[in-house]
Image (cartoon, rainbow, N blue to C red; front, top):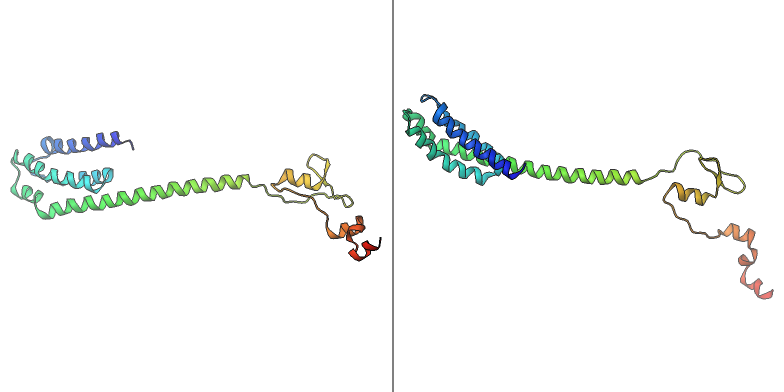
Length: 190
């Protein structure tokens, strides 16, 4: 969320709280309990420190607004009591901590999504060579999808990421190039 939008929402919530206390709340209702929700909301938007700061400011401001009206002393006393202030602090710390954990999980989720996208992209690039292919028994050429016969190394290079170099296996060397496979002692005699 944009930081300016968060600020506007937070200020609007604080102003709304004071307007409710001043103009909406009847004198016999404990509307100061709304401050716990406001502190929790600020903790969710900005974290623990900001919500604790708001909690420190809300208690005297709430007492001032209640002093303008004919509020029962039990409500005014409770809104200033250590138990109520502890409840505000507990709300601020709990929701601030929950916000922090949520942000950490969100960042980990984003990193996991990026890693998954990278793996999916890499998997999409992998071309699997499989199925049944026609291979010439004599020359070992392979039948391509378009019906033409190609050298197997060319075909595999087009269909996979395989690269080839050429060499001669010992069996072919014996059969096709016998002078390279004869013992060295017989070469001296020639």
